[in-house]
Amino acid sequence: MTRTRSSGDPPPDPFDEHRRPARSLRVRVLGADLEIQSDSPELMDLAAQAFAGLPSHRFGGRAPRLKLRLALAPSLRGTSRDEPPPLLVHAAPGILGASFSGSAFVSVTPRDRSALVVVPRPLLRFAYHLRYELVELAAYLLAARCQGLVPLHAACVGLGARGVLISGASGAGKSTFTVAAAAHGLALISEDSVLVEPRSLRAAGLASYLHLRPQGLHLLAAPLRRTLARAPVIRRRSGVRKLEIDARGAFALARRPLKLRVLLFLSARQPGKGALLRPLPAGAARARLARAQRYAQRQPGWARFLRGAARLPAFELRRAAPAEQVRAVRALLEGLPG
Image (tube, rainbow, N blue to C red; front, side, top):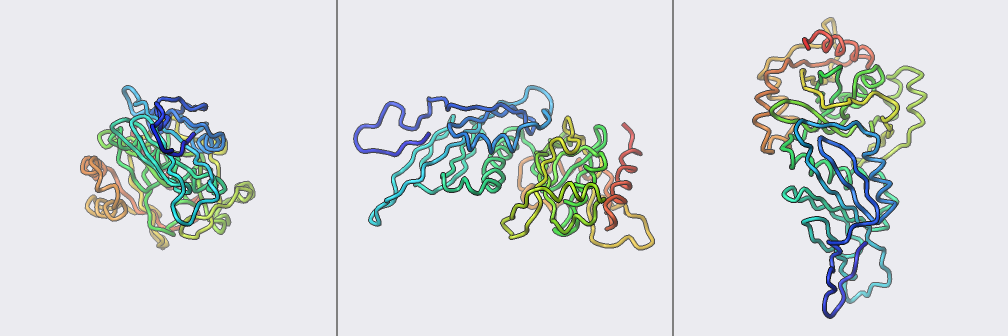
C-alpha cells in the first residue's frame, strides 16, 4: 500500500511503516532467511517465481533474518502540466522513501537487514525485468552485504560437495555449458551470478532460471533440445533474446553451498590436438579473475577470496560439443579428493 502526501497535519503513521502488509512469504535463499512482504498479489507472484522451490542454502551458524518489502504504486492519471504527480510514500523496516507516480526504485539497507522495492503498476507487464532487475537484485544485494559475501559474475556447478566456478567472456558458451552440465547431472548453483563466502570459498546462488540463446539449442542432445525449445523467450537489455528455462524440477539443484575446488575459464578456441582442459598457472588465473570481476574486486571480501581462489587448480576449457566438455569437467571433479 502507498499513500499520497496531503496537506495539513500528517496521520499518525504516514509511511505505513508500522503496518504489516497483507501477504508474506518466507524463503531460505543465498544463505539467509528472507521474509518477503507485500499487499500486492502480483508482486508476491513475482517473488514466488524468483525464490519458491529453491534449496535452503546456509553458510553455517545462524542464518541472518532479512526483510524485503515490495510495494506497488498506483497508476495516476490526469496529472496537471503545471505540477508533477502527487508524491507517494513508502516504507520498510528501517527505510523511509518517496517517489512520484511512475518511478520505480530499489533501496537496500544492510544495517537494518532490510530492502524496499517500489514498482509502478504500469510496469507489471514487464514481469521478467521486474523480477530480475528489481526483486532478485534487492535480495542478492541484501544477502551479499549482510553476510560479507563476494558477488561474482560467473556460473557454478558441482559434484557432491565440490564446486567449479565457471567464468568466460560473452560468447564463450558459459550458458550452454551450464545447461549441458545440469542436464548431465551436475548440481546447479547458478548460471549467471554467484555469491562466495571468502573464507571457506563456499558458493551459493539463485538457481531458479537458466538462460540460453535459441540458436544454442542445436548444440544439445535432441530430447533436451525439444524440451527446452518450449521455454518462454525473454529479451535482455542488450537486445539479445534468450530462452528462460525454469531449472526447478528440471535439473538437480545443489542442496547446499558448494565448496569451490576448481576455477574454470571458458575459451572460444578449438582444442586442436590437445586436451580440452588446459592447466593455467596461478598468476594467469589471478589475472583472468581480476579482469572478469571488476565489480567484485571493489568489495570488502575480494582480497581474501582472491588469496584462496589463487590456490585452487585452474583450467582453460576449450570449445567442443557441450557433452564432451561436461564429461571432461566431471572427470576432473571425480578425481579430486573429498
